[in-house]
Image (tube, rainbow, N blue to C red):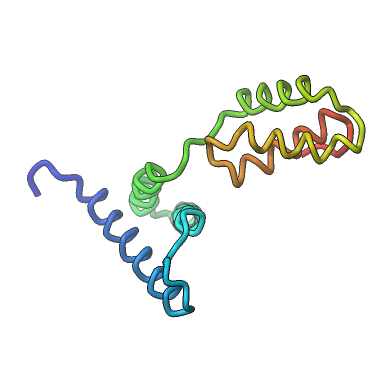
Length: 146
């Protein structure tokens, strides 16, 4: 195909098929609105996890070409996921929240967690919000290491 990325095209078709399948299942359950944004992100994350597992198995089986194909598909899928915050930026955001709230006791733990999760909400908040909350708990002394 002239000028087209076959891997991206086939991966997009896989994504669309999975979304349509999941949407039909949701509508069958009586949810007329279809999939929520969080469900779509969950589907994309599960597709990435499936491919990461496939890469591991292909590498164990001595099939590097198939592992590379899966890695290429992951790159396409990740274009539709929110950006990951690097660990240093997350540490800085958590430290800023803790400094702002000035709470270091167990009572302030919940408030610190909520504020830390809100601070990373522009990124992949579901996963990173949990990490930020754990970081806030650890830094404030109210929890254990993440």
